[in-house]
Length: 362
Ligand code: FES
Image 1 (spheres, protein in one colour):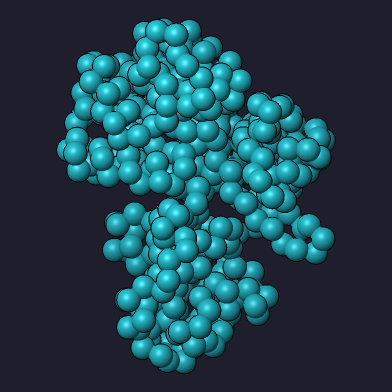
Image 2 (cartoon, rainbow, N blue to C red):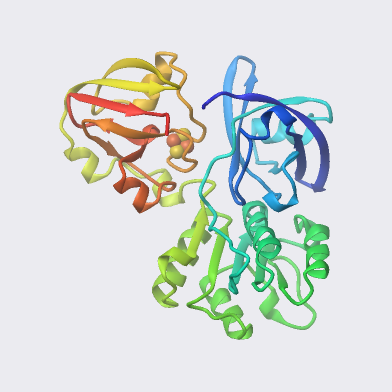
C-alpha cells in the first residue's frame, strides 16, 4: 500500500529553539495500517507552490506507549522549506499527508531477554534511538540501556525532560550521558565534545558494566558520525555486525557528491523495457540504462511510484526484482540479506537487461 493518508495534528510542541515535536492522531480506522515498530519512520508529503515535496521523519514514541498517536521531531534545517514550514506555521488541527510507517532500524525484543542496549545519538538523531531504547525497557524487564547523547549546549538537548523522566521511571536500568560540544562540564571532560571514536572508546572504558561485544548498539546522527562509529564498533571493538544498528538521514558527504562509480561506467549501454507493479497495477516505461534512474523515469511519466529522499537512504522506493537485472548505484538503507533476496532501491537503479520487471508491492 502506497497511499498517503491525511492525519490530524494533535499537538505541536516547541522542543528546542530549532525543533518541534509533532503528534499525529491515528484514527481507529487506520490503526492497523499505521501499526509500527520502534525506530521506524514516516514519509510525509507536501504540495508547496505546486511542487510535490517529500520528507522522512523518525517516529519518537514506542509501540508500548500506545497506537493512537505517532510522534515525530522536526529540526529546522538551513534553507529547509518543509522543516521551516513545520517549525513555524504548522498548528494543532491541521492535517498532514502521511504514508504508513516504514524502515528496519530495530531489533526484536523479548520479555525473557537480559541484554544491554547502547544508544549513540547526536541532535535530532535521538528520535529513533529513543524509540528503540524505550521499547527495550518496556518489553524486557531484565535488560538495561545506556544513552550517550551529544548536543551543542544544555538548552539544545532534545527531549531532555522526557529522557530525565525515563531515567527516573526505569531507575537503575537506564543511564544517560549528555555530551555537550560547546559547554564545559564542571567535573569531567569526558562529558564534553561530540561522539567520536575516541569518545566512544573512553565511554566504554568508563562504563565497565557494558559488555562491549555482547551489547546491541543503536546509532543515529550526522552521516559521518554513523559511518565512523559503526565501523569502529565492528572493526576495532569486534562487535558482531548484527548488533550494530544504524539509521542514515542523509548519504555520507563523500558519497553524496561522488562521481559515477567505476561499476556504473561498466554497465552496458542498452535500451530497456521496464514493467513496474504498483498496488497490483502494471505500468511500462522505456529507458536507457545510462540515463536517469528507474524511479526518475517513472516520475517523469507521472506514475504513482513511492519515493522520498531519492538518495538511497530512506528505503521508500524499494521494490522486488521479478525479472531481469538492474544495477544499484548506492544503498544506505537495505540490509545485505534484503539485497540477496532481490530487493532494490529504484531511485538508484539502472536496468542492465533489455527486459526488467519490478514490484513495489513488497
Ligand atoms: S527514495 Fe529514498 S531510498 Fe529511494
